[in-house]
Length: 273
Image (cartoon, rainbow, N blue to C red; front, side, top):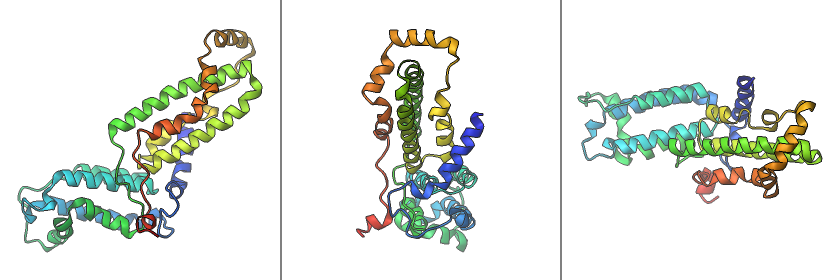
């Protein structure tokens, strides 16, 4: 059941990717799938260029491994945020991760020198931003690192447990307030999912994390013979009531936001238009 829910959420996130970023995120409407063949070739070429980095000399920007890793992380996060197919982004990530500077490249190979030329002038970050800008994409310049994503997932998981308790207790104490609480929570989860994808996090991982986070995944009407015991428990531990009173369930996105970099600036905004 959870796998089916993950698939549904994943389809929704993929379809909505063009809407995840601020207005103007795309210079013109594009279908990411149509760009995959060209990007697939580009990934091969840029990896070949990195392998030949020593041809540009040790002081060249192209020889900077840290710049390469920052550039590829930015590139992959941008593809995630802009709705490119999951399988392509995953394989591109694996190819980038496996790339290495060759010890003895053929520095007379014109194809390699062509792949290397631009990066040897401006560095890998600017070189890999070039095709992203050419496609009119908003570039994710501050990808979320693994530690921050782990902290975000821990925060979400803790909040889901508290929200599940709130739903359960509200249902047996103040049932008239349950529909409004459910509607508000589901809106929060929708906003959160869009924000996480806009930050360049992998859409399949976001979908897996939030697949059972909506009210339908957290609450089901309890059997009548369990209501009295649940009501007793809710009366003794009223942390759920405090959560409702302080609107803590509505603040999940803003709390997660503190662990995320700012939303990237769309190309037209960056240009001052």
